Image (tube, rainbow, N blue to C red; front, side, top):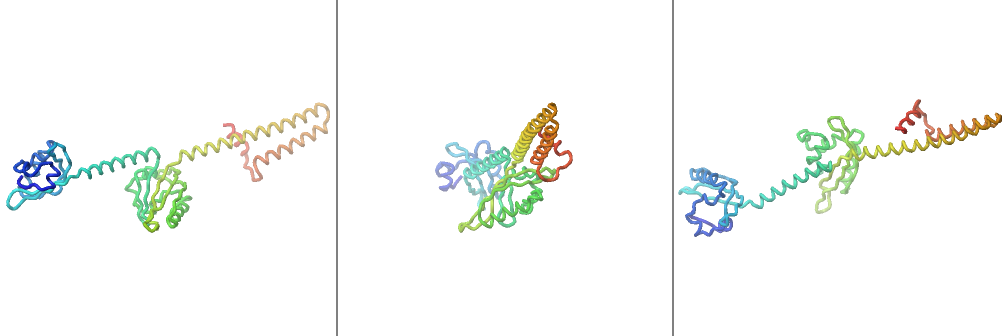
Amino acid sequence: MTRWNRGARRLYGYDEAAAAGTPVAVLFAEHRRSEGQALVARVLGGEHVERAEVDARRKDRLVVPVWMTMAPLPSGGAVAVVRDVSEQKLAAETLAESEERLRESEVLAHTGAWLWDGSGVVQWSDGMYRIHGVDPRQFDGSLDAHFASVAPDDRRGAEARLLDAYRAGRSFETEYRIRRPNGVDVWVYVRGQPILDAFGRPQGMTGIYQDVSERRRAEQDRQLLSEAELRQMQAREINDEIVQRLVVAQLAFDLGQHDQAHDALASTLETARRLVTGLLGDGPVEPGSLRRSAGAASN
């Protein structure tokens, strides 16, 4: 090497006197030295090399990633521009690690993230594709595609909540069903918040989806159990009331008090009708519904 500027001194740690006459190959890390020598040979042969990514070795033997651009000189030899990309590498690795953690957290929490630009473009995270059960290649990134999987009965309301919140520049929360390509309905919790410019004007929306199907099923199971327990309690009350009145009628009959027995039976029948009407309501009752309800309560 014959010329060595200040940037080269900062990067490699050699001053110009120490660098003069040093073979170029020693500036490459040992594990990349043969690759570096091949690059130098290509340039000396008249080829331009743009932003080759190699590892450089500093004077203190620290290895740093660099981009190297080299070009041949008309008078012979070559010139090289070397840029330390350690920070870019670290940033890229940190970003990749963050993205991987995001993917893992989405899997564990059954969540996905979405971003709408306020016009026609929607972006989905990996979790969104997983919740919807679709391949990324099947999603064209439009607002229509964003709502395409929403169950038909829920779609109008889902779209209205998003658009109303966007126009008002406010957050929203809702739940609705989406239908996967295999026909399975999934309940999702949806949250969105506006993206505002410096003047407070909405520029888009961002938010999350969360698959809450298991919670919905658990709530439904609890409701069914509560209804079954209520019916059991009502059935016991009816049983106690009717049995007590029948015992009175039987006692009157045994004592030869037939008029009293008749009155007790009539009262028992009226009470039974009143209790059953209160249990079933005033609406029409399908044949066998009482037996089915009793069967459901006992299961």
